[in-house]
Length: 314
Image (cartoon, rainbow, N blue to C red):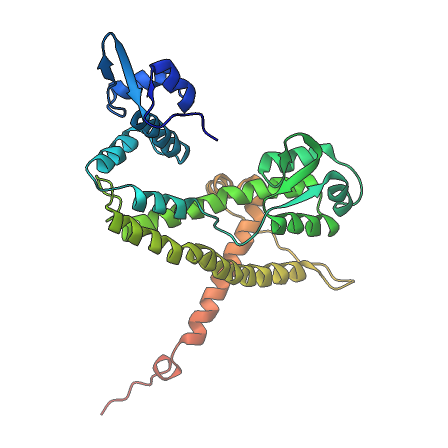
């Protein structure tokens, strides 16, 4: 039950106590036009419940990631009767879950059992740093797992023989690339879809509600696109990788025949700068094979009816 009386008046120290802001912060908000000036009563400045409500609005918007400049624009819209309901609904839509997964708890004993039964504090620290595990305050033997699916993938890779350190390193590398994809998707949709809602002024309630509806519709598209493209790329590169691996194996009793070919030093130096000294031979071989394949395709696609014409004179 709140101990704040209805229609209460506050000194600045009381307002700071009830709002959680400092006296210095309250004065800074006043100077920036975020908070109305207090009423002067005799020699004292007094604040009302409206000031307390405004401070709580500011704190809520700051928690949602808004800057003070943006908050000032939003509050000015509120003061002119435009309302914040639509905007806060849009924020809630964006802040909502972007996955159907539900976080679960796991004990340290269960975690160790899933990864071979051998406790590994370094691996656990890596998982916490990466956000795969989250510590539970006041409980050293329990963790929160935001994505059970991600933890299951790590467990399967470990069971297949991949070291935990390699799994952590791979996830760090993968995360950088996935974050780049997410950033590009947001830039793309902002440019082509949301630009009209995110102009130089806060959107109206109707515009914010329409934008929130679009977020709900477009939210699954990023994952669907990545899933489809990942499946395509995995099929392409898995087949290529398998062919390359099988092609390297020579029948027993036979060895690959080689022949030395002179290449100008300037060429090998250029190739070395491009791919590294240790890869010069592989690059030259691949380039030669590619040229041979290209010429073979050229021959195969030559029209036989135009390639062997006999000059005839009338």
